Length: 279
Image 1 (cartoon, helix red, strand yellow):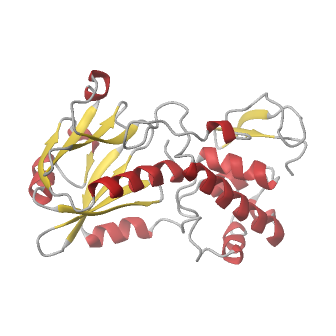
Image 2 (image 1 turned 120 degrees about the vertical axis):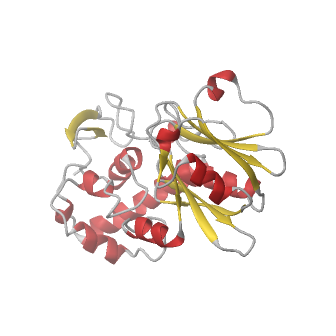
């Protein structure tokens, strides 16, 4: 599932290429991906608006759509496992075109497609009030400077659940999933199964620094592609060679050389860690 670095990459690409461009038509081939709207409502509320901004919140890609008076509606895409937003001027390759769920035709002749092979992602059109309520339930952004080490430590101490599970709880911290929770725990030298409330302030500080480091490096590499993730240009992310834990079960730890353990014991998700140097 695309996490913070992947959705951040897509949002930045869309903002750079689509900001200020108007939408002239909407086609919905797979209505089951729509939430809080239907094909007719989506078209009536979107056509004629311009894309004022594309940005990210948590694992969501948000397009702010402005009407002639500047009033906004928010097109919110949650890609989940196989969703992608692709910008193209010519026809998509047949394999991509077969899985297009919705298409927005733009005034400059290009088209923006939402492609989703498994159709587990969602597309919603929200007014500002609904959008504020939806995103208000999410936790702080890990890269936001307003998230201080003290506030992060306090939030961890509110839960006795496994540290990795708490990091992935979107109500606690927005945008972090399995890949980057695993990497941050390895980088900070912390056992991902350790109760979150057992971390002393110094360990919580180290974990937040590790999380910010791995997220920043992954954004610079345009995200992690194992299977389906591609950016708005249809290209894969380049962070896989930098992964120290995720996807490396059975390989030697890059810190101490011990064979990394691959387990499903934490919340039923694949977790890779070093039993020797993560405590």
